[in-house]
Image (cartoon, rainbow, N blue to C red; front, side, top):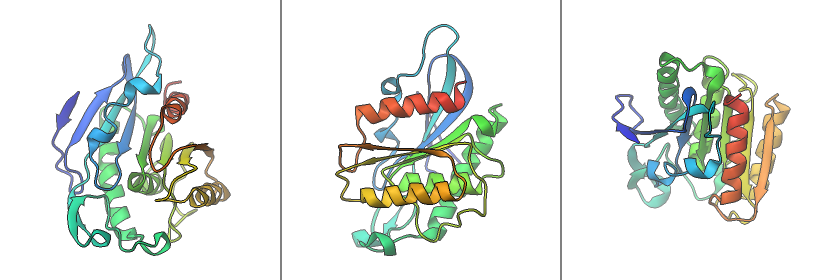
Length: 229
């Protein structure tokens, strides 16, 4: 594991890890509100990625969001990819903040391309807040990404769907007991993406606003299907 500083405004350092094998692909994985890279940097063993002879290595980047005042929490400073304006999910989208963070994430994509990984082998994904930013990054990328992963999240109504890039694939996963982002909103978001030409999967798990072992196994299968071939 390596930690490196990042001079791109909007990212407060990056934790980097890799699966076994020669690196052929990259996954940029964003945490949720108030969390940090430690939330997911230990998940690689749970993804079930191939590790024997001939395995294709994948580099994982876990960036930290900067600290900022969050309106819905009384202006308390915490790690956040964008401000949360309101308790009501339909009224709280800070679209300009999402776009700023998406462009910061795309600087990491550019860095991976400079290291020899083509955009078609790069996945951007995230949990909750991170999932929205991942969707925006996939949309705003200069070239189509290999995949976008949206976990326990949704697509806000102002999202300029159909006007930008379409990644090769997307994956959405959601808990049936999620009281932060309702399951129905996740389902609706998935259908919205599909109607705009995005091709992908939607999986449901009996859990709250979190992740589970079964979900991680499915994510590993999907990741290797996108970038490990």
